[in-house]
Image (tube, rainbow, N blue to C red; front, side, top):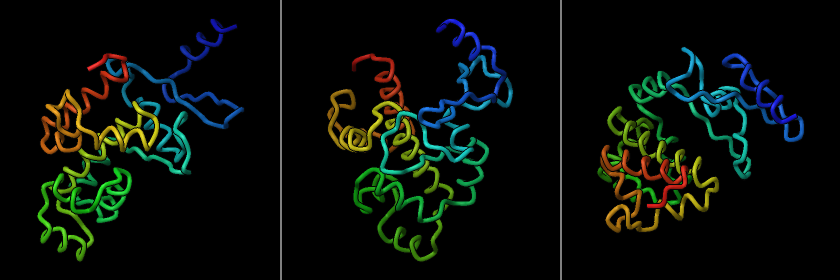
Length: 189
């Protein structure tokens, strides 16, 4: 029975979904990136486009939205609204001053951005990187409290720094994401 189920999922074309009536959550077959047909989306992207909750994420009634790379680029170039900043601040469980510092925005500049309601493309890209780390941590740690704790606790692998503090540069962000992906695979740091 299980072999038949595996075969039927493997034989589904890209973008096809199968339902689980028990929890009413639809998933899309996930391809390895190298083998993905052109235009195929990852499971998380497909669920987000449908506006669904991602399976396996404990409640609080939140829907984590993911967009395509093209949409991310467009949003960054237009500049994120101040709402994105506030949303990330509450998701990370940190103060506005700390997020401003992590994003490399001066307090005076942040005050002006709050008045205008829009961040510059450079500031938006920094917020995007921090949001990406948060999303990766949610994928791996699967719980908001675990994510907040891990991101705000000094880690030996980051030379005793907190992951959020280590991620203040692009290489730092990439390293934090790499460590999270290794954790997902069960590789202890």
